[in-house]
Amino acid sequence: MIARITSSKSFRQVVYYNENKLKDKSAQCIDAVGFGQEHYTLTSKEKLQRLQKQARKNRQVKTNAMHISLNFEHGEKLSQFKLRQIAASYMDKIGFGGQPYLVYLHKDAGHPHIHIVTTNIRDDGSRIPTHNIGATIGMVAREQVEEEFGLVKAAGRGNAYFQGIVPADIEGILGGTVKNKATVSNIVRAVLSKYQFTSLGEFNAILRQFNVMADPGAEGSLLREREGILYSAIDKEGEKAGAQIKASSIYVNGWGNLPNSPTTRLLKAKYEQSAYRRQAFRDELAATIEQILQQGVLFSEFRERLRAKKIEITVRYNVKGHMSGIIFVDHENGVAFQGSDLRKGMGAAGIAARLVSAENITRSFNTRLVNDTLAATVYSEGFVQVLRAWKDSGLQVEARQLPDGAVYFYMGATHLPTGSFIPAPSHIQKYLLVNLSRADSRTNRGYRRREDSPAEIHAAVSTLASSGLWLHSIIRELVTAEEEQGHLPYELLKEAKKRKRKKRSR
Image (cartoon, rainbow, N blue to C red; front, side, top):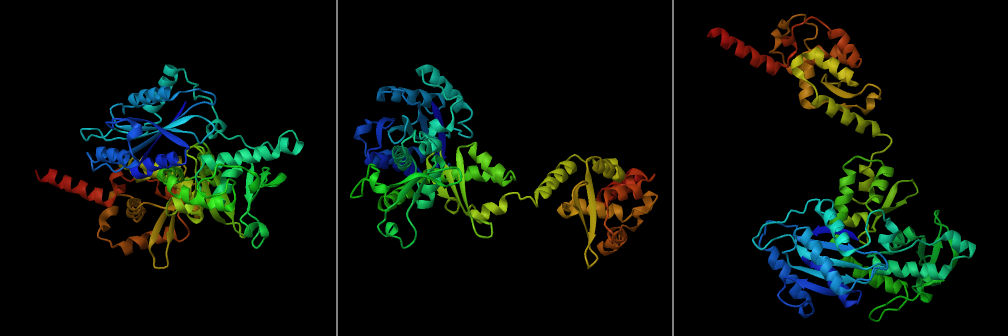
């Protein structure tokens, strides 16, 4: 069994995602716990209102809708009675046993699975903690339920099982050992049933994961005018393999007055339907992407870390080689999104701007080195010792003087180009200016000019800054027998002298 727990701010989205599947007969409500009446007597509105009423017992909690899916192995014969028992046992083990919840049996995938809708607000208004629940008590509960009901264990299973779709065997199709039409037709039907998407681009982004593509024809072509589509198996390079298959020759379960074949007309209706159904998973997907981006990753790392979470990306580039479009396919939740539809800044340009490029890898490294080194610095040991500690850590300092005479310090790794150095934090800028302006002093009386203006301090440092100030040269010029107090920041020195005068006056 594979379990998935997600949270949402909208009961309406989560409930109607499942209720809409009842309408097209791809799901069935099999239980309603804590609703005061049998599930088959409840209307969609009554189900929604019951959960909303429970959640209103704590209006401060905004993320209060919980959506849980339990997925079982192919071939596991589980009656509705058994599924209700499994749902009850799992809910009890994750701490939701006393909550009202709905259980839906979904029939739109290649494996049996149920969805559970509930809330994390208790009767007394307290909130059930759900942070990282799936990876903690949720994992323990899953293993216990597997043992209790003799279910096939989730450990060791790959993505192919969970997706319920087997990619087209291109070598088999080209070699004639695999039937091209049956393979492509099965994949198209499964994707239409399992996934939610709102454009042909998103549809193709999903199909490509299973070595298939949909071609609506060129602009102005007869195929495009008649809203037809040709489906083909494709290899890893995207080249078509085997004969193309007309949409009209593939049977799917249509609805309403729509055709029973995956033509453009049927797909447009699917787009409208999916626009609502996929919303329950948008925030979760956006949060996952944001978490990875905040780690400062290369494009290759970005793709691999998403793959580890069963999320694939399809990228489109313009003639200049710049990223011009990006689509995210969440296989676990069966949804596809254009990046720009997820959240502001997650379109192609926003993603490209946040990925670490080959040019700024060194800047990222320098940022980590500077932060770690400064956090470990013991300033009370004296200025020279501080500089020595920085050098031992591989840190280097450069002073740059602007045309107006102002001096600013930049820090980075000794072995990296100074162009990638980052500005020193403001308190370090002051620390270096105060100490270096008195670097020629041989006694602690170097602070006799503490009334100096910032401009005079800058001028005192400018001789060192004019040719670039490197850490090793600073140390070479400052290794001296000066007293430790002589190299404390001005503010600390001032406080120390005040305490000394008070002591003497006593």
